[in-house]
Image (cartoon, one colour):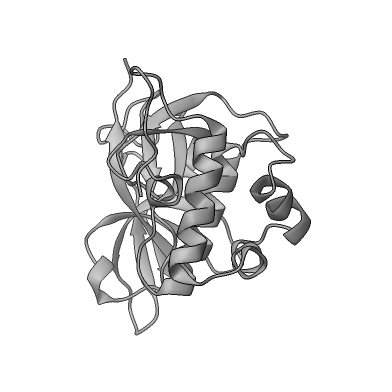
Length: 213
């Protein structure tokens, strides 16, 4: 099912709500089950499905898509839930990468801004605000980051968002450490040091970069 625009107008929140209803019916998933898997309250999701709330913000749509992906065992996009699988989408910039390529959540409910994400993208948007990613990233670039996954040999040599065990989230090039389960984290900026033999809890791929300007 696809939401239909009227005379070129974008789909309304009510069309998105009806598309979500349809998706749940087709896949025989209750709103309660989806809300639990998405980390959202059952009352909150129920209010939207019943038309008691006008719209969901983009970050909540992302949570629903991530929960739906876990339930089905495949990637479910925000566009699929909204019936707009082929359309680009607005998502909020909720994170920033600053000094030391460390990623921080933006304080409070307000984000920097909305940005256009690729069609079907599921994940988070992070703005580069420092020069620790030079020359690969410039201040103002927006990184579109996929949901996290467990570390494996497939990440060796790649620039990833990594969550260090009992430590911060960083944007680093992942290399083999001195023993199994340990990784050397190379800085993108050649002026910054490598962090040796770090244990990682989770890694996430950078799916797309929107260049500043």
